[in-house]
Amino acid sequence: MNGDMLDPDAARERLAAWRERAEQVAANTQAMSERINEVKVSASDPQGLAEVTVDSTGSLVDLRLTDEIKRKAPAVVAQAVMTALGSARNQAADRSQEIVTDTLGADSAAGREIAQRLGDRLRSGPAPEPAAPERRPRDDDEDYDVTSDFRS
Image (cartoon, rainbow, N blue to C red; front, side, top):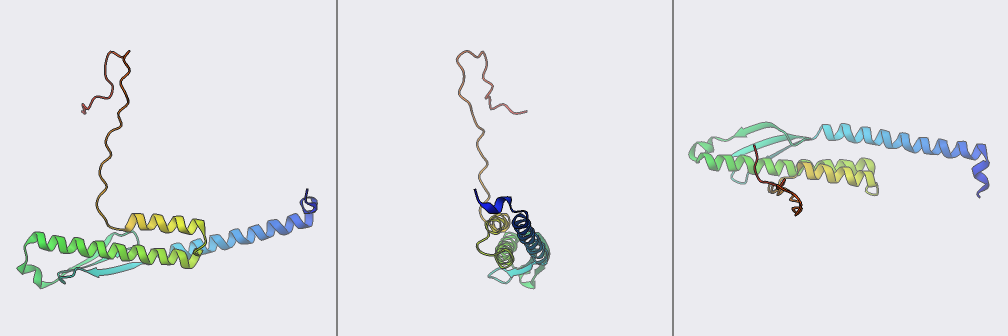
């Protein structure tokens, strides 16, 4: 057994050091949150039809369309907006992840988890396929099948 375990002064020092580290993590996390909340990113589509601005959550906060849209089919304009939106959201994810690394450090497990979640939430990509309903095997003793596909 370590003699420091029973030494009240050593225990106080360990607790004070732990408290200081916890307070620093809390301050860093608060600073990270404030910086991320200030993120706003603008992006345009390659044709220059649309420019969008998103906030730190990836929500659209501004949309600007050029006069060129008058000569384009609505589907082309819609795709331009979606392309610009995806680009802006990806850039917001990159910027947010940089902020996490800057404030919490690249070696922080919590920082890596936060950065991953921000990226997953913000990055554009194909919509996930809906999960197939889970089926359980039918028990031969049952008089009915409770895994019916009937939905009301």
